[in-house]
Length: 64
Image 1 (cartoon, helix red, strand yellow):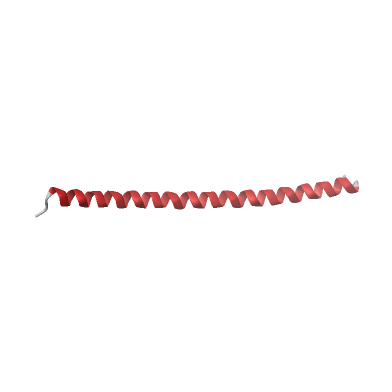
Image 2: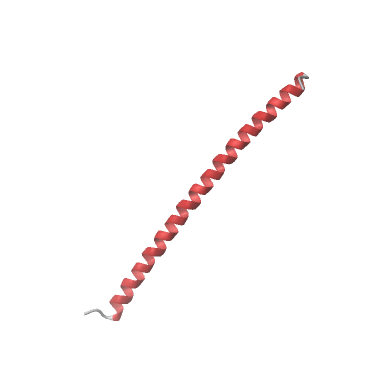
């Protein structure tokens, strides 16, 4: 026969499993978002540095 302690224990285990799954999904989402941001920033920084170098070379050579 089921008693209150067994039902309560099963309910708590279920609740912890659901919370754990949500937390894990959030961690994965945050990690993917941060990685994407870092990659975009690195690419933009590299492109910006390249453009700046080209402008500097043009200015130094008097082509502009």
